Image 1 (cartoon, rainbow, N blue to C red):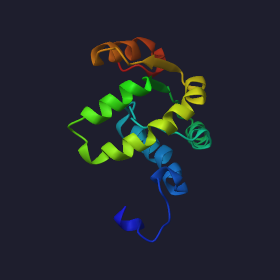
Image 2 (cartoon, one colour):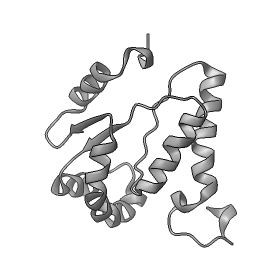
Image 3 (cartoon, rainbow, N blue to C red):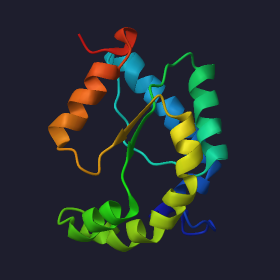
Length: 139
């Protein structure tokens, strides 16, 4: 952010450079390590997600898109009680309504949707591991 003081934007995802660098960086890391990546990111704009998916496809890189869903009350409770990322609390709370508005297309576009509202972390992980296509599984 410090390097971009002269740029007008509210969200780093609005920067075309961010959307270009994410797939390129992921591809280069995978090429270098030979490993699959897990990227934790919420993209709330469908046009941005389409752009990212197309870039991954252009790089012949497969994406298994998992949506960890939760109802609004659960999201707010988790955000308000998170003691690790305190500085992100308000930003996250400010985006809950945007998430709610994006849920329909996000659910449609995801390869796997898991309602995490009442699941333990280990159960979420197990469901993801059981659903990842064989060609993407970690051996």
